[in-house]
Amino acid sequence: MRFILSIGLVASCMLYGMDTQTLNIIQTYRTKGIQATQAMLENYLTQKDFWLGVLQDKDTDYGYYENADFLFVSDKSIPDLTLYAIKDGHLEKIKQTTALVGSGKGNKRIEGDLTTPIGVYDITQRLSGLNQYYGPMAFATSYPNIYDKAQKKTGYGIWIHGFPLDGNREELNTKGCIAIENHVLNEYDKLIRNKKTLLITYENTLKTATKDELATILSDLYQWRDAWIKNDLNDYLAFYSDDFVRYDGMKIKSFRDYKKRVFDKKEQKTILFSGINISPYPNEAGKNLFKISFSQDYSAYKNNQPTYTSNSKKELYVELNNNKMSILTEK
Image 1 (cartoon, rainbow, N blue to C red):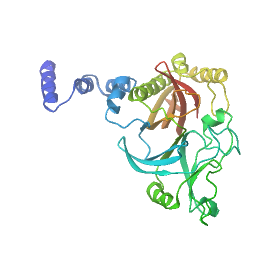
Image 2: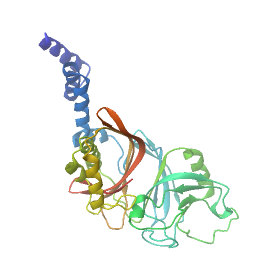
Image 3: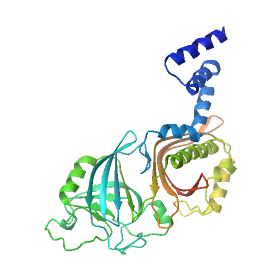
């Protein structure tokens, strides 16, 4: 009877265009139940081929985005600023315009060096009521991010803003911000207000992301999560660089000791990731760096009793080395 049902199911799936993978999932659910099916689906998330399939028709030069609406990209060497809309994994170019940036070359290092930073930043706030020097309004960025802080970089107040309202444009640079024409800034303000927006800044050359790199990172991200859920300390720590520094300054040795104490509790865990964004991270060292951010729902249990729950935004800065993700810093 089961054989007849299986043949019938295969015939139905072929009729409706289902592939072998889909057939396996349905058969597992039918014969072994929801828990076995969930385990199968979780395993797919750790496989690079699965993510290559997800990415095959996406625009990925500037990364992979599940939780972003707009992306600014600025080349300091021109200098310019381009705005893209992100829709279902595709980038729609809104406008490219000339810009002014800080007079300093290379990456920003210390407060007052008049240099526009190189990296990836969130647009965190819309600012109004400013000194007329900054134009009609400004978008604040997340500089310094946790990777900048781990590199001991200082400074603050890096904005995308306009030109002086009094028309005085004698200065052809900024104090480290990105300045664009006021009418363009106002156009952008109408588009991105209250929308999730990021900024990528670089100088001369940006190493764009490949689908293969992004698929490696996504599958490794879920392998890292899998080791975390299973309390497999060795596999979990294998995803961390020897140069790792946590957001609060904790270095790799102390971090390993801390995680050993946590994993030794043998708690059961449920860890869900959503809204994953991955951006190639420009840097002067020429390293293959990426910024990863996502929402994390975390629950831990002991003897079926909850011991800890959290809902937070996670941020990882990773280097891709020998086709493996290596975490440099996290929050």
